[in-house]
Length: 195
Image 1 (cartoon, rainbow, N blue to C red):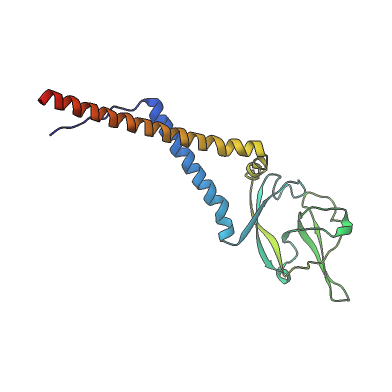
Image 2 (image 1 turned 90 degrees about the vertical axis):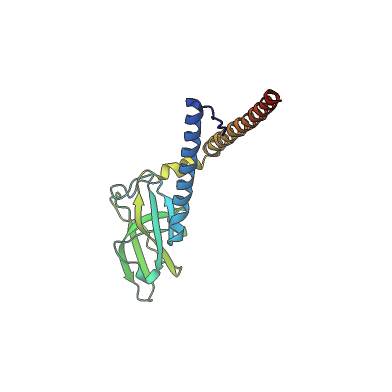
């Protein structure tokens, strides 16, 4: 019975294989973490301002669930676009501090950032059937998403692992071809010796 011994792989080759495997595992976990919240009905976004400091900090990821507008209550932290005449043209994530029904029957809310000394200077009505309410936050992770918004950084983050995977595959292919060539050489040599 003939037994072919495989040559031992070098430390660099084993380390390269480990690195490729780790990169693939990290990429898979990151992909699942990115997609999983939406499967459970959560929307996510990055907190970019400091008006809620103390409750959650700049760079946190906020996970929100949409609830019927009538379920929004004082104390909830909501994300909304302030009225057009407020001078603020971006989404705001603040705590509801006032909920009043006007004589006309219209419901008006007022919010305040937990770190702000004063309430927001506007009152508003929610016009959609549902409203995102913050359920939880994860600190600091949002900086990854802020960084990935930069095209060059995104190219590096995606390109380097892809290049490592391609390089690892090429090394394995080369090793396989060398091994096959060596086996053919050994068979020819064995045939010449027995002839």
